[in-house]
Image (cartoon, rainbow, N blue to C red; front, side, top):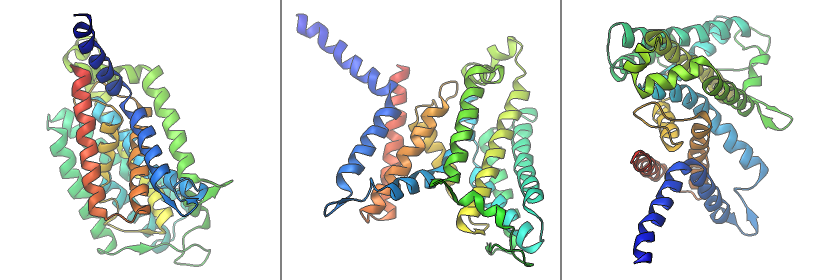
Length: 332
C-alpha cells in the first residue's frame, strides 16, 4: 500500500521537474549529445573553440529577434513580420550605404526608424482597431517583404568596404567582426539579454507586460494602460528585428529582400522551447536565450554530421511539440 501511494507522487515530481526546468535540461542534453557524437578521429569537432564561437555567432540574430518575440508572446500576441523586417532592414542598410553613399550613423538611424515604424503599425492596428496580431503582423510581413523587393529591384545588394564611391563605411563591418576573439553579434546579444531581463523583472513595464498576458481585463481594471504597453511591446519587437537585420547585413556582407525568410518561426520556436506559455503571461528572457542556444547547437550538430537540412526542420518541429506538451503539463 505504501509503494502504491508514493508511486504517483514520484511520477508527478519528475514531470514537474521536467516542465519547470525544460530549457536548462534541454540545453544540457543537446550539448552533451553534440559533444559525444561530433567526433572525427581523435578530434571533437563540436568542442573546438572556433566552432563554439560560430554557434554563438550564428544564434545571435535569432536570439535578438526571439527576445522581442518573447515580449509579444508574454502579452498573448504574435509577430510574424520580424523575418521580413530583417530582409527589409538589411536591404535598406546596403542600399543607403552602397548606392546612396550615406555614412554609417545616418544609415543606422534610418534603418532602425523603419523597423520602429513597422512595430508601431503592428501595435496600433492590433490595439486601436482590435485586429488580431496574427492578421496584422501577417499583413506587415507581406508589406515589408514587398517593400524590400521594390527597394532593391528584387536582387541582393553586395556590401564592400572602403572610402571610394559605391563602398560602405569600414566601421559598419564591426557588426560582423570579432572583438578579442568574441563575435560582436554575440556581445550585442548578451547586452540585449541583460537589458530586457532587467526590464521585465525589475520595472513597472515588465510587471504590466505579465499582468496583461495573465489577464488583460484585470490589468485594465487595475489601471494598466493596456493599449500603451502593447504598442510599446510591438515597437520594441520591431526595433530588435531591425537591429538583427543590421547584424545580418554585416555578417553576410549583403542586403537581400529574401533575407530573414523563416526567422519568425525560429524566434517563436526559441520562445516555446525556452518555456514561455504561448497563451501569454509566463516566460523569461533567459529561457528564450536557452531555447535559441538549443536550436543553434542542434543545427550545428546536424550540420557537422552532414545530415540533410530537411531532417533538421523535422527534428526542430518535433522539439517544439515536446516543448508545448511540457508547458501543458506545467499548467496542469
